[in-house]
Image 1 (cartoon, rainbow, N blue to C red):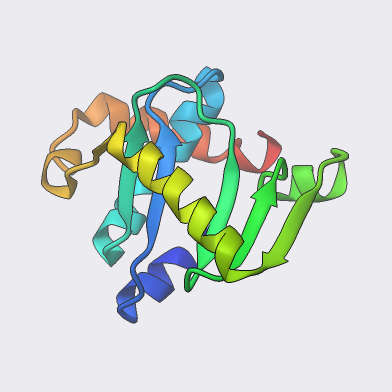
Image 2: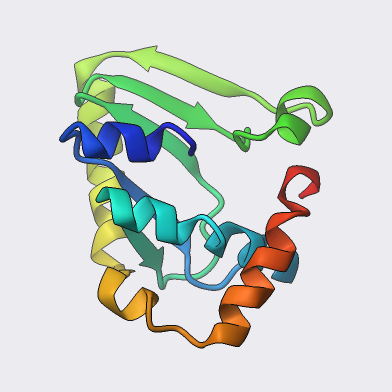
Length: 136
């Protein structure tokens, strides 16, 4: 996530699809703590409305795909036994793009102008949970 703003500022089209409702209250608040920086850099954040979205996938230039269960955090990388496949294939990339487009069609684009106007108590709560994000 930390590189997404950098790429977006360089003109790369960066989109993130997250579940609108998370199965963990802590994770939900902690993840929203990063939204302001991402939105300010031009990253598009889609909130999936079709239930819990547990898929982790990355598509680069329609060809390089990463698909798996790994959360990109230290806990998942070093503690949990999870896996991600790296697939370098345009056919698979096209299929993954179709899946991601379907998710986007069932999502709501987060409006940066509305996001900055959210209540102060929400900002404070996000910041408090931000400190726990390395543990979540």
